Image (cartoon, rainbow over all chains, first blue to last red; front, side):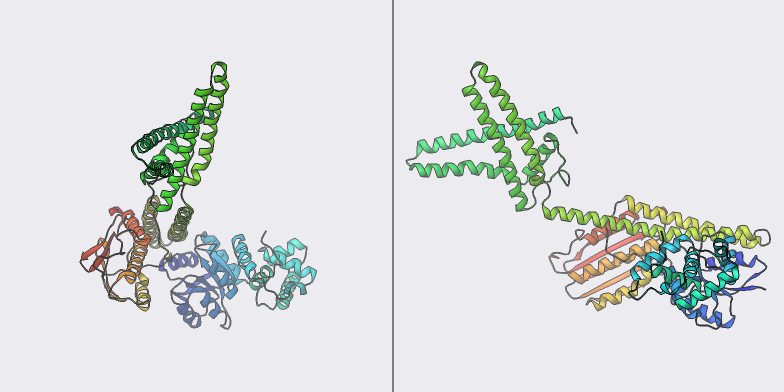
Length: 216
Length: 381
């Protein structure tokens, strides 16, 4: 099965580079390109992609707004934010808006391919240490006064959330806790329900914002 | 910094200079008072009063001369071996500085006078062996006075509180400007390097089955790297010039020109403007600099234009970008400074750093013109 990819970037050279990298793989196909967020939405409706590689800083409709709009499609494509700088505040906003992961433009071609496949599997979020620091740095200012939603989790679920927030995949969590992968998946589903979030990125954001996990 | 014995010796020399000056002034006073007392039938209180004036007047006449701050400052740095905050003091620029200098000069003279009195006492009392402890005490007094003066100097000859605040502000401004430049390097070069690594990665991956793409990727890499190097050259040129700054937002460039003009109109200046040539393809640093120039020029016109109007022309030729702004100004153009405004001075420095030219002057009895030309390529710089 081919993974259908939409490239969104205001710079043709970036799109061209990403296209060449992705098209060289048998299981990946770039189905459309867009130069800004508005065009991205149009293209996503015309030729629904599985994965969107989304630039953040673009004219007119930026990557954050576009990510929010794409999340309302049915089915929503999975979004990877592509950025020049890892300490870009916009990345956090894009993750809150519903992006599943983030990728640096300077990443090696294999990493780009790996990111698309990983996010398509809905397996694991791409959450390098830098973004964890970014999320937590931003989250500190936002810590809400409402009760900590992670308090509702069982001890086991808290353990799982801690490892997910550290960037582990379900398989890695299973290995770490000596559990079956199906058990881990059911814990993750239960965590999402209890926290009231739609995916594991949002769960990790809640974990940082509530202070349940600290970056250090 | 000289060693401790040398320093003590030099400080004593400074006190001795004070003594010499005090002695010279005392001789002058004595002469004048003697003449006065001999030639006039004035009562004694009147002679005393005039005598007091005669003592004070020469000290004030010397101490209040602006150059005295420079002279004493140089002597203090060379002989008292202390670094005054803010570097070598220049001539006194305000009455408060003159008064402080007079105060310092008086203290210097008084210390000298104390030493003179000590010398006289030694001459009067020092018979035979008695002279030895008296001389030792005299040396101790001289050394002690040198130390006292060294402690007082920074407060009296250093910058006043207002000057220190201004110096701190300049430091902060410089730091802000350096941060802005660092951010510019980070953005422009970081962006270019990302593009280079992405295109290079793609080219490596597909070169076997799509050599055409590889060639076009290499061309983009070449261009991006060359432009980034030119950007670096320009920005590092700015850093070397240790530029002053404006409070402009970092990302604005000529693309936001219309917005700026509208905002200025809203602020009350009727701006009539023309743009010749395509200014959207100007290199980003030149474009940002030009934007800052326009912003400062409009701010300036807003302040000084006598009829609330200004004419702005931005022209792009093959080799350069020129910004010209003309506004009506009062005859004396009192207050419309050529370069003294911080923003305008910053423009002059940065235009120079970019290899361009800048003028701001009155071009008619009632008209003021600011003009800046920036070369488009780094090689002109």
